Length: 450
Image (cartoon, rainbow, N blue to C red; front, side, top):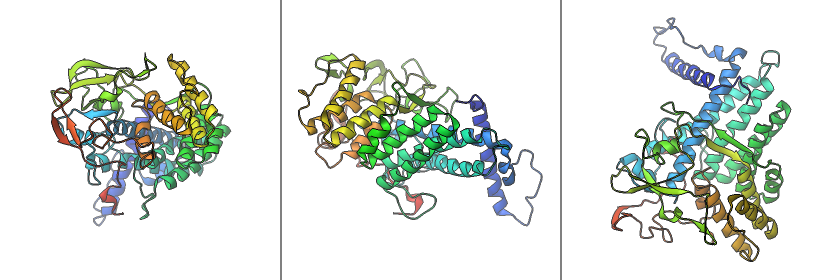
């Protein structure tokens, strides 16, 4: 990324916008002009139209999208069948027990530094991207020499909240409207934004942003079942490509939420252990060979309920561990699903086999997967392993295949490891707490729509 887009300026940009928001609230009060005083550091609204602030506006979008995406990925993993609750904290226990109603403040109204603040941070990042894009679009290249690159950055990042809304939420209104858009409609909006981002990135000479947007586009197309287009777009992503949301050790919304909440090292007193890896993700093999893509272990510590053994994985190992946003591996499995759904089985199997080769495990062949249903089932299984606790893919598969022959039960549902609706003590097998019935993340009650 352009060295001018740096993290120090990112934080400064967020401070500028926060002060601006506070100022707007004060202006609304008026109180017969009693508040018309000269407050040092106050940002007038017209000041944000200064082209010299363009870089700050871009950095603000990056920071807020990265934080909201990191929270979404962490919450999705916790809510899926990858982890089971091991928390004595009432709020964090609810994430692991599928207790996520529309009134749940942690999901609905909490900020990005809170425990998985989702809805508000995702919308905040999306709206900021739209407004800052429009603002910078109004400048000239003379006023902002990096204008083309700035627009590409904002559009590429700004579409990612729409992926979260289209894959993990039951729906959401956009921009104050009363109409709740469903996953297909939200994916269509994402498709438009990512398509725009690809063109802008090409014009700016930013191949990294182009490929990041192309992975996002393929993902949005997959939700809409536009399989031929998925294959076209995903095939253009270069081998080895990876784009991440950066994280750092600064307390608050810059830390890796997954590490902070559930995957903390036993030696790190600052990290937490509100969940433990589910037994069905331990000791995974293929044809008798351990699968290194799901490398989990008992770290010798206890969860935050003080009796559940804490199992963790080897991916997010620190507060500053980056969070995957887009990758070649994802593009490959998008293609595999599209090939499988269109009965192009040899093409799908070839992708699955290549992933096995790279993982160093025995091949997958046509003999292993003789039917279309077999191939689709294995695409889902391959994604379970390839992206364990990454990219929110497991939650997407829970919801995508629900009600089909490929359905994946949530914890507490028949067919899961806790089929009777109760969380069990992993040490004794005794029933502990009841699971609730949350699947997709709901539209918060505070929206006032339904």
